[in-house]
Length: 147
View 1 (cartoon, rainbow, N blue to C red):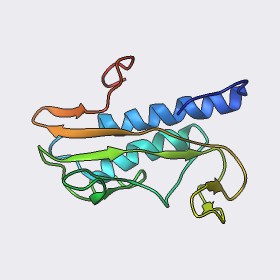
View 2: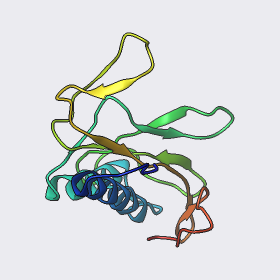
View 3: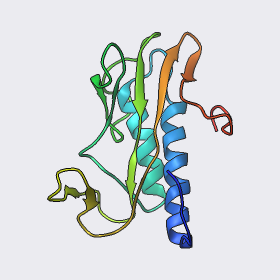
C-alpha cells in the first residue's frame, strides 16, 4: 500500500489502522492458536477504530500452489476455526473500509470498489507458524518484526 500525492488525514488514518490491524492478526499466530483468533484480532482493531472488514476476500494458504486452503478470514470469533500448527504457511491480508464492509466488482471484472464509495486499504504479509510463534516471510528491510 502506497500513498501518492496529497493524501487526506482521514485516508492516512485508514492506512495506518489497516497496517496495525494486519500486525494484530500476525501477533495472534502461534502453534495451538486458531484461525478465528487471527480474524478476531484484526476485526476488533478495525472496529475499535470505526472501520469495517471486507468479507468477500481473505488470506490463504501457501504451498505448492499460490492459493491453497485454508481460507484465512480477517474477522472471526476467538478459539474457533482451524488449529494452527508448526509448519503452516499462509497470508494475512486484511482489507479495511472507512464505511460498510460491502464491495463490488466493476464491469472490467477486476476493479473492486466499496459499495458506499468510501475508501479502503489493504496490506499483506506471508507468515509461517514456527515452534515459538510466527515468522514473517515477506518482511521488508524497512519493517521491524512484530511491529
